[in-house]
View 1 (cartoon, rainbow, N blue to C red):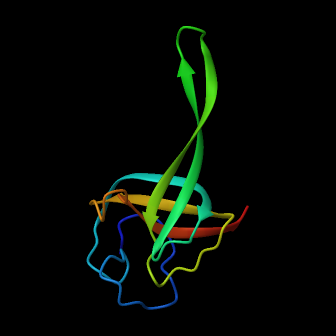
View 2 (cartoon, rainbow, N blue to C red):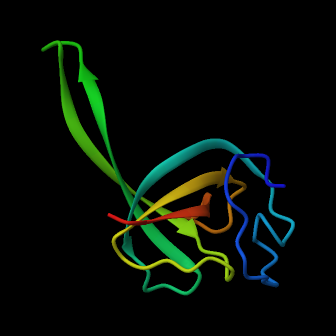
Length: 106
């Protein structure tokens, strides 16, 4: 229904910004990371680690970034969970991603 290969949540919600039960389309990047904060209402912070190639030294360095994502009411998540987030239209000043799948604890 969303257009990507994820399990649909068992719980129904009436969140208009839910990709499963609302009208929010997802497009673009699909990223994976670990939840570091869930203090804000309907928002989670996801930290993802990746490698960046430094051409001068011909080596890779490890980097990490924090991304704010919208958490629909139908998905339950807590700090330390591994999640999958998908890009969507801008929902606020910092939120451009929405939670689409919870993979479980790290």
